[in-house]
Length: 149
Image (cartoon, rainbow, N blue to C red; front, side):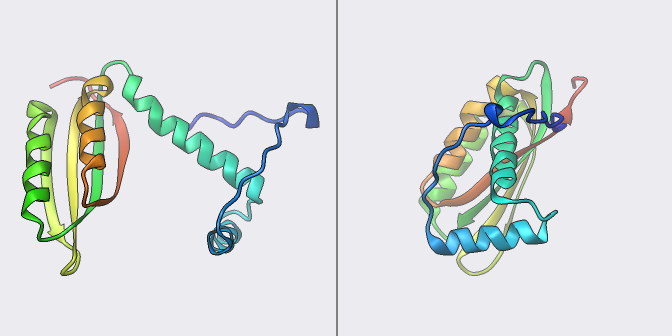
């Protein structure tokens, strides 16, 4: 999904200040990340995170068919989890173009799904997959719109 151009903040009056409490280690890791990525300051980094999160949320209401990937890191070797994931994947029907899973180590697997369809129809099943106990991390990346089948 194309990133929206940044709006320039015109004056100090356009800013809203708020406090954020996070663990010290997380702040240190984030500061190191910012130094290694365009030397953003914390405020600009947080603005980027918010913009990215809002752009990711937008896909669910997009018009027309989208092409997206869903990548998940899940606990390996849990039969009940595999059954639940397969059950939810079936909800996609023809909107699921490809599914693959690969072991990362003895405790984790990587699951990759390629999806095509209207965001509002994809969103509920994506949310159910990501909410499953044993899904350690997951992300949807919209890679474009589709002209249809």
